[in-house]
Length: 491
Image (cartoon, rainbow, N blue to C red; front, side, top):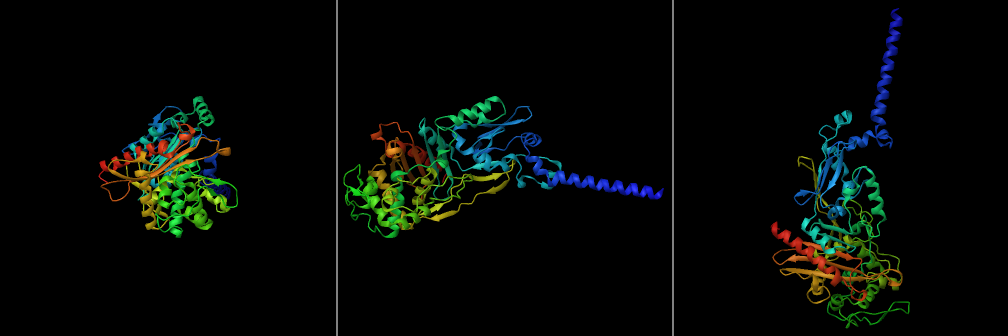
């Protein structure tokens, strides 16, 4: 009888161990498999059972959460949704997340390990920590100036602080309100279909995910390559550039829209945007040095994050001489995002150094304790400091007496470069109007902001579209907003 009891006890113990092992297998080893199963509604219900953390611009949050009392309890809300959509992205219970809502999801949702005082205990009890806060680098005045400056036109603006890489404005128009994608009702699906089918592509972040031919704004890079390589030593010396200029190996003749470009100096050609001079300079510099300079400014970089991915800007490295000539004036296959061209302007303003652009200043717990903060870092040395000094002088000439006079600001030193980029079959599309610039308050030691503006559908007649007329006023408004903010903050 005693032996039977022992056997029964051993069997019960064995079954208990097996039960514990199986429970551990299900709850620990296979937990992620069950959590990720689309049929499992407990995980999303738990995810939306508490408020999501806030994305902060300036002194206040631009996102929030509202208690609906439904199964997916808390829905995302947005303050000035269309204004900040290119920064926040959306958080949808149906379609997921994008931009900062996606890249900082672990902080905002409260799942980041640093938000959990006892992470192992949280795993066992399945408790959720409060969502943290994401503090952005955006200057609210600059963001609004860019958004209102573009108005109803399609286009984008990117503004960065040259000394650090902080992104001060990131705007894309037309925009949309991410709040229409919150919730689970039929209206959410209707809004998703409407936004994705819209002709103006409001959900496309043109500032970081759309590339354009940069046109004459690319001449900043060509000038930097010519000066660094020694092809040009004196800004005021003649360049031996014919007008018209025959593209090497072809019968195609390139002309200019302004007078005085034949044998013009680099300073004159830059101020008045002589295509023939810069096309020939690109050929004289050569494929290797032009490609190396473009890469040093950030072109062809597929690893750039801000923290969400940025579409790489393109400069081909296998061109014949005629294609190189066209690429050297920002045409052919050369393409750039507005953020990339803001980085170009910032490199000139920052002494030749390209700083890594970033959008998140720091992340914190719900109580304000810092989880992590961003430290400025250098990506590349784009050019010699002496070259940057000379380019700053030429960019100042563009604003003070050239094609960029609409960007001038009283009480500040402003440098800029205009551009009008042809595109479409046979250049039949409405030209893109570009302007890149930087600004320094007269009582400041260094430039406070570098800006890039592109307007896709300028309102003027085709022959009157220009970066100086259509894009420069937007850049000026953004620069003024940043300078005023810097003055008010005592910077």
